[in-house]
Structure formats: structure tokens, C-alpha cells
Image (cartoon, rainbow, N blue to C red; front, side):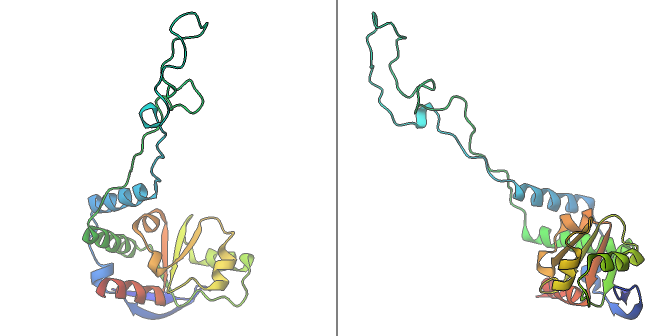
Length: 208
């Protein structure tokens, strides 16, 4: 698959060949759904368990008389009504994550990239380097590219510092290095923008 390489100014350059094994895979909704669900569940932190009555170590000796003391007939300091006692109906420890085969995760990422490429929502830029790291200037450049409400920019080993600084306050613009590319962020973006370096890194990631 051939795609025109553009600049941030919207000028077209030479073509780049995208590997069909990475950018030409037929997407399946069930695979994409499984990977996105796995990603979102991995973000959830496990609930911290509270110590209940059976988990607290306190005396079980009866500490008052059965009658005549003027108080209730307690026989256990672990009861929830006492300071230091166990919590009644406290939260239980739970884990929300589930395992997903690495082959499925890899296939899901290929499908997400392919979906953007086949849908005409993939833009390849030569570089993200800016002469001046100015937000206003960058917003003007991105307006010419017609990226939609949300765009995801993926660079090579690291996002170019000038672009990262200029785009930090732009709503709907996300940027990450190639190693951080994932199905959820790609699918929720209206347009996926890759640099030449990102294309090389992603193709090497699957062929390595």
C-alpha cells in the first residue's frame, strides 16, 4: 500500500510503501473488542480489602459480667462496634484483569492500524520537528491537515520535543512514541498520524 508523505505544512512529498502484513489486514470487530476490553480492564486497580471480624487479632475473652454491669453482654473485642474491631461488610480484594493471548493482542494492533489505513484516516508525515515550539503556530498547521476532532500522533523512539511542547495544550491532540501504540488510543482517534520513523518502528515491531 502506497501513501503520500506530507509535511506539517500540508505539502505532499514522496510516496511511502506500507507493509500489507501490518497495514493491510482485514479488521474483525470481535478481535478489536477483546483487545480494547483487555486494555481497559488492565487499567483498573484492584480493590483493597478491609479487615473484617475474622481477620482482626484481638481477645475473645468475655470482659464484663453477664448481668448487673449496666452494659450490653459483649464477649468479643473484635466486634465492629469497638475501636480496633473488624469492619462490617468491608470491601473484598478483587482483581479485574484477565489474560489475553499475545498473538491476539498483536493481531488487534495490526487490525487497528489497517482499519485507519483502509478508511483513509491515516496520514504519514515526514517529521514532527518544528522550528518554533508555539501552540498557535502548530494549531494553524494542523488546521490545514483536516484531522477531525481527535488525532493521535505517533513518532519514532520519542515524540519530538518541539512538537510535544507545542501540542500539550491543544484539545483533541495526543502524541506518543511508537512503543506506546495501542488499539484503544488508535480506535478512539478520528485520524491516525504517523511519522516515517513511526512506520519503520511499527513494522520492525511486528517483524522482529
